[in-house]
Image (cartoon, rainbow, N blue to C red; front, side, top):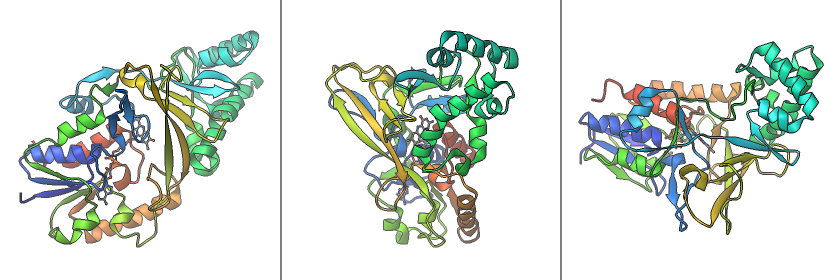
Length: 372
Ligand SMILES: Cc1cc2nc3c(=O)[nH]c(=O)nc-3n(C[C@H](O)[C@H](O)[C@H](O)COP(=O)(O)OP(=O)(O)OC[C@H]3O[C@@H](n4cnc5c(N)ncnc54)[C@H](O)[C@@H]3O)c2cc1C
């Protein structure tokens, strides 16, 4: 096949771009360095029939109907409402913190007083933040802000990012929510679901098009010399790698997932339990909750965060920091000057944390006008 476009990466960003181009009649070559499609969203059925997410728990959630409708062409959905618990002082508490969490961690009279003050101050159903509470003159509200900061946020951030929240980005602390309601949902989006046959099956279906040729186990470096210099490229790989790290390596946080199978039906009551203060891992994911998989065994993963090291581990989270943004912008400017035919996108190409819906929205926007 003679190709009109090259797409680097078969994750949800690359698959969306490739599908849109192919559906508009373009011939597309998709390559991926990995042995599987799906990128970070890759999942598989284990021998017990449990759908395991290889790169950690992935929950699809969006308010964007265009994205929801687009992906719904490639999958049916299993409705799933995500709830997260955090182990705090030995108890499992709903997070983000809300009135139910307050009832569980404080003595009854104090919990009632805090609830009344929150409802008086903000109104039932409102959302406030740790920062706002910590700035209040009322000692009870201030105490609540300090409590959530310390028990839920500070140590989790230290483990996850290897930095204090203030060192990372002061705006992050400002945004951590506390809900003045009894709504235990982690996400409040209109659409929340898991692809019924898994993310891999959905992405395979996106790529299953007569105009798309897919080559796995194929890093860009292995075929770079064979690509005509003027060929339009959509790259979802890390932008620093494209330039052989000439300005330096973009820092990421990495996560190691230690998978363990237990001969018991369930390990924990929900798919995700965070461990802000105890242990070295940040959280435990239990996969059978997502699609309600039936088995007398269960699979969980312990997540350990560390710095990304080239060739040693995977890039997971871009680190939001002015210095890193500066380095990224240098690469992006260089790309615009020297490779106007190469479009970078996705969590690695844009060096930006995207939820899956935002990654798809970005890919749809980039290919708009180039697709049917
Ligand atoms: C731990 C974790 C949990 C997450 N949980 C959620 C969640 O619950 N909900 C949610 O909406 N989002 C979640 N996300 C975000 C989600 O993973 C991203 O939105 C999604 O992966 C973005 O897809 P992508 O295609 O941009 O990147 P990727 O999935 O990283 O795909 C990039 C692909 O490009 C390939 N590639 C890279 N460089 C090259 C190269 N040089 N040559 C060939 N191939 C290359 C890679 O092998 C990979 O397959 C989570 C992210 C992490 C890290």
